[in-house]
Length: 197
Length: 197
DNA sequence: CGCCGATGTCAACAAGCGTTGGCCTACAGT
DNA sequence: ACTGTAGGCCAACGCTTGTTGACATCGGCG
Image (tube, rainbow over all chains, first blue to last red; front, side):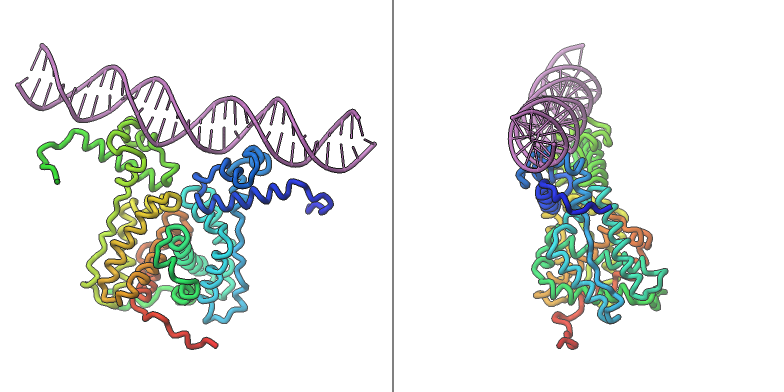
């Protein structure tokens, strides 16, 4: 299946350039406002080449929005540090790679992007959470709650840029958010609703 | 300033219809994909009327994205129930009015919408938080953390539609998220980093 | 050299967009 | 009944978009 590296095609650099420009544009502008023409201009090639190599704008986005959370093996993390570990990992990952921001911006208006976002969190986050030893019946919900906080952080910090969230540095954010994640992962379901009356 | 109600203009119904259709379209499609033509079709009028009444697409959005969180007076809420109260209020408010979702979707790609979002949280949420008796020096950061969780919930539930977050009902969500908000509002800053070293 | 596929450019297409100005219609004031 | 005006529709504009197909250029191979 994997072709032998015998023929490093001369166009590989062009392909890669298009992909890099596409990621930047999608991250900065979202799916609709990022135009093929602008991406091609950034990569200093003709727009029609984008079509040749990626078929369509949708195809280009699909290639540009490939994203791996690179989640660590949570079975090797002490149970009481799961929250902090995850929070730190997410922040570190996002600061280094804008792809998630591109995907997030696009997911707000593009159904395909939203679908891919759901896939990432089902395949990667929910899977990792289910390996923490959490009750399998609750793992998906716990992963959803974790996603709500971590994506909310990405949204307010990188997309909407709420000043207080932008100004806090990653370490401070992890200290605040870590315990939240920890509780979503470990607190028993149906919490004491004692005072209900 | 406020004109006497002497002249209930015949076009008021049209204006309102445009606004209603605009809110729905902006909420469903975001700023770019929501077209004036589609909004006009929903309201069963001609696209040019939208221009007559709201000047431009930007103007229409500005009118459609007017949003009041209607936050309760937090000084009247017992200190230990602030988190639960706020979480419940947000969820209730969003289930009833799609305007915030419209603003959220648009804010992902439209700078003006993001600006308005920042304004809402500075003017309404940060103000309310600062009245809880929190240290004025930390109130803005606390409000930012609250926003990160609540907007993350809105994002995953209404925009990306992560299944586990969609399936939980508002009461369950409030039980999970309430304590998070409570901690963001009340936990002292520079939390004990005892175990370091 | 002469061929040929891979690589890249150019010009144009049809469609959709926000926006504009002219024209028709109905109603209030006299 | 006549007229002015507010409310509404229609057709078109200029522009940008994704996408396409014809044409140029390069680089290895006979």
